[in-house]
Length: 378
Image (cartoon, rainbow, N blue to C red; front, side):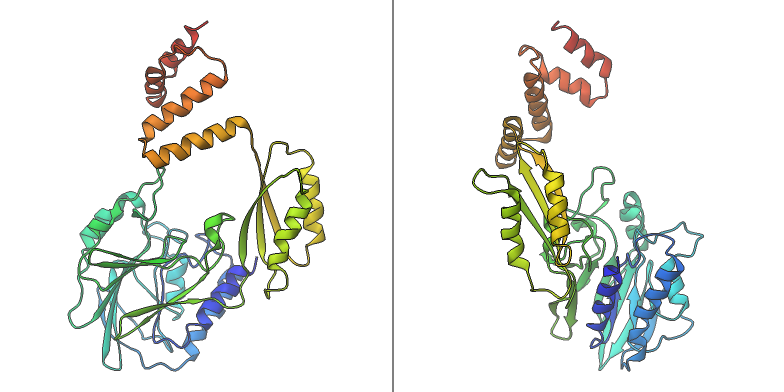
């Protein structure tokens, strides 16, 4: 449970050779962090203030600065985790009041060091459906004579998409003219050059979900000016995460397979790695008991987690449908209808059902008409 603090402290320590530190939101995992959490955060964020820095704040853009902070400046957004209503003070603003960082939301700051000027403008996390309009209304512009950075904490299509909360921002409606756009909302990290826009997705410093995509190296990015070079620096001495699939075989027991996998990660890391096993079998009997024994046996070396999946002929067929759909680029509506048809056939429904009409009624929420179609076969 201390991984988030340990990784944050490591990230800050590895940043102490920098002239400026940027944090793009989600410093905390909830809107109202406990006093103990705030105390630990203050201790970590105080580290840069004790380091002598030549970086000077020379101008603000739409922001009232009451005092200049000590040491290496930290510029931060609040993310979706810290966002509160307009009339409430969030946790990142509290840290700004304590002189630990500069908080940005629809405003900016200009810094100078050794003759190089950097203009940083930022929009903290807002509800996705309003993001494009808020950004358009704010309309940030690059500052002449500066290296210009725009900070965001939003979903941006095509990097992230959720049908429950679809993004209103996309590559095309991001402002023009910025040398670098940094987005802190997306937990995977990468640098993308799309058209004339360079976009840095910072990623998370911790494992947020035990999924395969979380195996990527956690780290920080360092921007070197005036070369405009971006370097990824992995975090040192942090907990590693590995994801492994295990298919039950006739020639090897589950325990033997897991032991073979764990040998790869043994005695290599300072902290116990998290190893997530996805166990695939046609028969899941006794797997829980076996995994409990294995977890206890290796508890001093690994943090073991697991999930189970029943593999059957029907599952194989569904996987084949999804794979074929992806390769042939079948529209999502056609894919949905195909899966519905396969499921009904497995339940021995009449092959003469009008699957297209049934799917239309279901997708429209017309359950009564869908029932009528199914009842006509009896």
